[in-house]
Length: 397
Image (cartoon, rainbow, N blue to C red):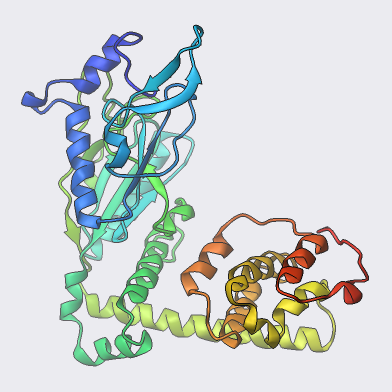
């Protein structure tokens, strides 16, 4: 498949994507201004990626518009040895964009379009009954994407007492509240409000993901708008591509909110209380487990050195120390208990590391760390644990 329209190789695709802007039938122009609108709404941090036509690999996440709107150079050479210059975003066929901080994206991945259509109608009915106004898109292959853009102004209707409780709980940190609330709301929607009536991609609970951009091609056709109501979706895929010359549509960005914002915030606050109780129980179980010495494996002495209160003076080494702890503790205790331990450690160290950095590290891939690696790090800080570990280099099992 060609991922960037090339006049010399595939005129039909090139002509279809460029189209006729005067008639509102140009994917290149429509998608560009659509992304520009998103970028203006979000400000810094809006990113896109697309397939490089030479390497056929995805580009890195790049800020929009940035260098994406101009020609990009590539180190690849053609058969004659000349460097190849690749096109930017405008003629791209397959483009992904970042999920907006106030956006919820729900995507099913059942084997057939019919199954995904049925699943989308179920979650759509649930969301619309609660007052939300989703936008329904056909992905271009077998799935359907449901986009919900949350309207923060709905919280102006929340009673003052409850609003004050939220402010007190978050100590006036509005950004932290927004981030945690949106993650909770995505989780509720993707789980069909805890009913698990159908399965949707849980990876989209975090806002940092990329999603196929509107009007970008999948296998059969281009991602196109289906309607604002779950009943608008057709049981037959609405395929738009260069063969049938049907152009994909864009839905107007509609902000939506629940019918009862007060009830939604109350439900969110209850979930926070439940989470606190769960963390307390895990902390208690961890303490009892250590007391009876039934843990699956003990921390290595070199890692314990990072847990000591003296490590507080590590300064710039705190972030790397956190990286080591997360990888070691996840392996031994699992994600939940490891997160509690690291949060406690960071608090003892004077909260030198931002919570978002700890959360990001827990979401990232795990690394195998040897004692040799940890010892080298500690040696840079003037901490010697070679005696305790007896010079042996342990590897993860």
